Length: 120
Image 1 (tube, helix red, strand yellow):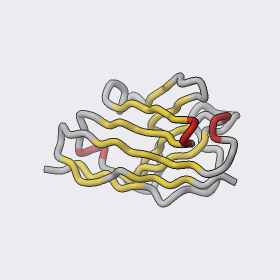
Image 2 (cartoon, helix red, strand yellow):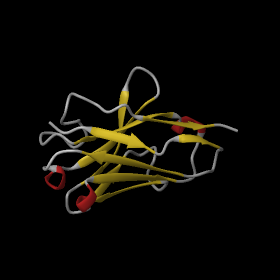
Image 3 (tube, one colour):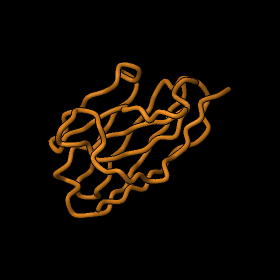
Image 4 (cartoon, one colour):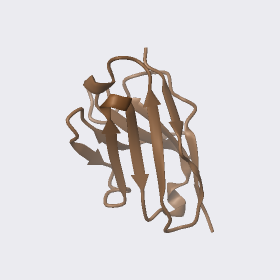
């Protein structure tokens, strides 16, 4: 079982930037596609995916503003968020991506997440 620890959230003004990090435990990190998700209400939504080789995919709402990356040596995935909008306000989580889906999470257990608040 892999555990995830997210960090880097905070309060930022509209148009600002933040960089989130997610440190994963376990030895299989480099084999997984990794994803970022966010939850502003009851539903947790997929944000971005990166394959083990570095290919990326994004939700339409963040395309062109967010960049996902990974460092397999550090078992860490990042989310660079630019041009932030109030609607980006949410708790952000990472997880491995299910082998059977382009966006669904692999693990049932989640980390504590990191709060991002975009407000003036």
